[in-house]
Length: 189
Image 1 (tube, rainbow, N blue to C red):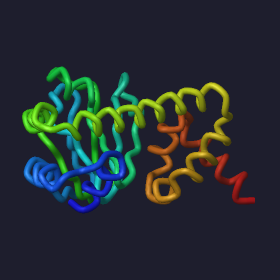
Image 2: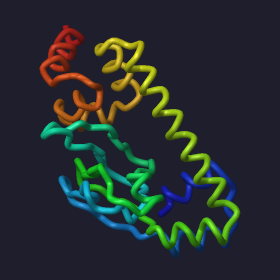
Image 3: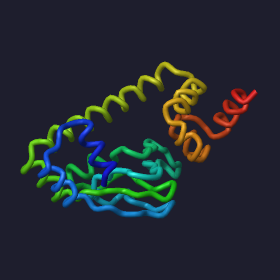
């Protein structure tokens, strides 16, 4: 819970009452590796904070797994459209490693939204941060080579680079695993 409270507090001030509400509405769960947290076709019921571990978000497009999210510790994730509109998701979210998540349900999320000042400010901050990351990722796909995308990924997320399979990393970076293997061999020499 401390990680979550520190994360929130770094983006907006929290009162003692705010802290109590966060502690009340977020549930801590330890999740084994390779566990589905969300399956396509199901409605996302939670927003998750990843306190420990690694999670991937992906879609199965014509039988091909396309990794769209690699979530590192100390960050939020959810299938946002599904969560907000309470409609079936196109996404899967799965733990890569054993993980500890703190999750808040849609009804509890809505309570915080209505009954506190900090929650709306915080949600806006996190949403803007994530939107900025998405825009940067699109830009990277437009202007960086595959090798440059890989090097940027390694520099920004060294823990992910060490703990995510080549298949997942290649999919996230928009290349085939064989291409990523070649790039890694070039860099090693």
